[in-house]
Length: 395
Ligand code: PLP
Image (cartoon, rainbow, N blue to C red):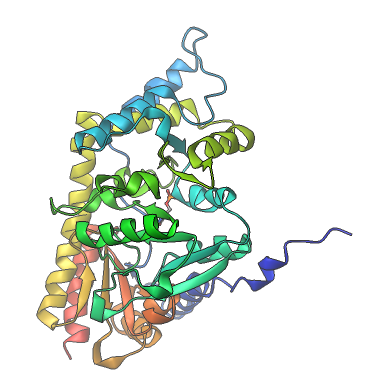
């Protein structure tokens, strides 16, 4: 008799998004003509930039001609894209070899798949509040999870300490859901800690493109020592609107080894076994994002989300509510007013302002009493939400 993976029984129901959907549906059933202002979702609203669209069209045409047609692509990524990404890092002073860059179909896929590199008995440290997939992927893998709560007192930024002993450490900066960003010095303490104890940091840089302060690190590899303790997982989803197109990349330095095994070589073995590469067409579209034209155009899209963030933070500043994020990140994490719980504030905003946000309690116990706004919505809806927020929370 087949024995299924019993760890699936340990997974908690994805209560957060299910419950949001149920409550939202209930409200719409009772008020069918309402236009809800959706500041809950982390999906983008701006279309792909012209440079990417043009490259995608050209790549489709390539596939129509035997002379330019591509069949299976190299499993770890097309050389043209691996070189382009390495050159992009070089502009920030990070020297990578193209064979240290692996093209992926997105950060979510990689965050789960990469666990193949680690022993099943590994202990994994997850600072919270956290992107829910970190916990679930590790529950499925049977890993021991150590939760590291953060809070207002440390700006929701995790710090290494005795409790942080683990084999694998997740760091997400800029963070989802808090929008908090690790400074160079704070990230350096993690790099030093991981090198000292032999842990590997999984650095989720899905929101690096939102960083505007020059002194904040976009990549963990900007820091000395990271090449011996870190893997960086990145995505074009939020950088360039690829959530529905799907493209990402993972950086594993050749110098990252544990117990005599090189993690880069192990990942090559993994990818060449478990994938047949990413579509040629998508990789051409992705390469165009890194062109000068693509960078200018994607920066303009990000500016739209940043101006959404400003509309909301201006309202929060006026209301005197405490928050992190919104400046170098597309998320704002605020303390619920009047001591309300996350779900009480959710209900208040839905009922009185027709705003849908995300209750902080859904990202870990230490998120209770906090709330996440996403800045990826339409500017008109965000402006209206800021107006209603002033009126509802100002009472
Ligand atoms: N990592 C974080 C922190 C995210 O918030 C998300 C998506 O919301 C992802 C990874 C997944 O990105 P992708 O669309 O590349 O799978």
